[in-house]
Image (cartoon, rainbow, N blue to C red; front, side, top):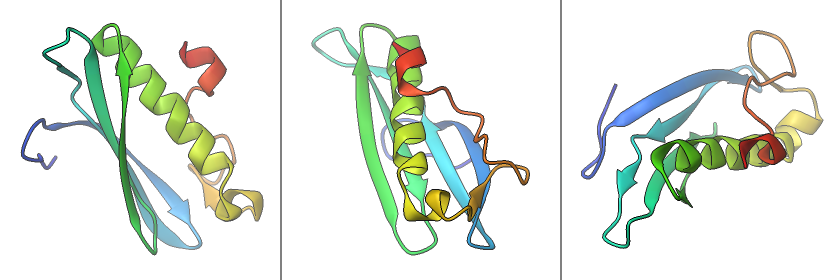
Length: 102
C-alpha cells in the first residue's frame, strides 16, 4: 500500500463503480497535539478524488467514524442509488453505517 506524507494507508477496499475499479483508503490514525486522533480517508471515484478526515477520542473511534462517514457518502451517491456501486456484486458495501460507528 502507498503512503502519504504523514501517515501510511492502513486499510483499503475495492468497489465496482459504473463498471470501473474504485478504491477507498483509510490512513493510519495519528494522535494530534490536542490528544485526539485524526483518521484521513480517501475516496477515488471514477471521475474525482475526495480526501477528508474524522476525529475521535482514540484511534479506533477515529477509524470507525471515518468508515461510517464513507458509508454515508457512498450510499448517498447517484452511483449507489442507480445500482452501479457494488462490493462483490452486492449493494451491501461492507462498511459500518454511521450510527453503528459511534
